[in-house]
Amino acid sequence: MVIGVLALQGDFREHGQMLRRIGIDAIEVRLPADLARVDGLIIPGGESTTIGKLLVRFELMDLLRQRIADGFPVYGTCAGAIVLSNQVLDAAADQPVLGVLDVAIRRNAFGRQVDSFEVDLPVPILGDPPFHAVFIRAPIIERIGRGVEPLARLDDGTIVAVQQGHLLATAFHPELTTDGRFHQHFAAIVERSR
Image: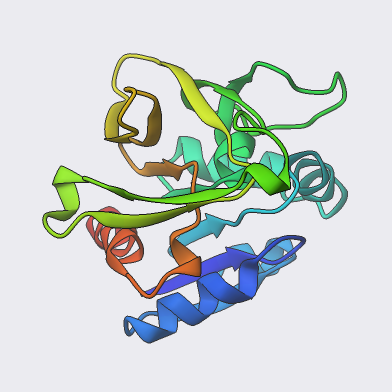
């Protein structure tokens, strides 16, 4: 199994390091030929508008959308979750998104960089202990569609992690921790899809 990390912008190196730490082969994906070599893809945090525009520029947007329709597993963290979403509540008019995850998401929902925070989240699908989540200019998921399973919520009920079949999304950055359980969970999704 090989998992790709979209390496156009954002914290892609950290995802690659986490995957290798848990024993998964990882490559950086920048071109359509790279995408053809992987069994699943992580879209990292960064700047969602920039990531979307680069997906279009590097001729990955339509290709990736088609592969997802065919069952290709993708995991989006923070900005990557925004890029996956079919409704971005506060998007710029020209923000390209894949539109494949049936959620409404709000960018920078907690405020600016100085409002970033960390919290221990219960994530039943991962078991104990709680997952230490790092939120940096994070989005929140305000609506989920049918077939979308919430995986984690903040104490106030705000949804911050979801799964829809072969798609996984977190509003936070698991790659910035030493806990590989979300990456392991995604690897299990990829393995089942092969």
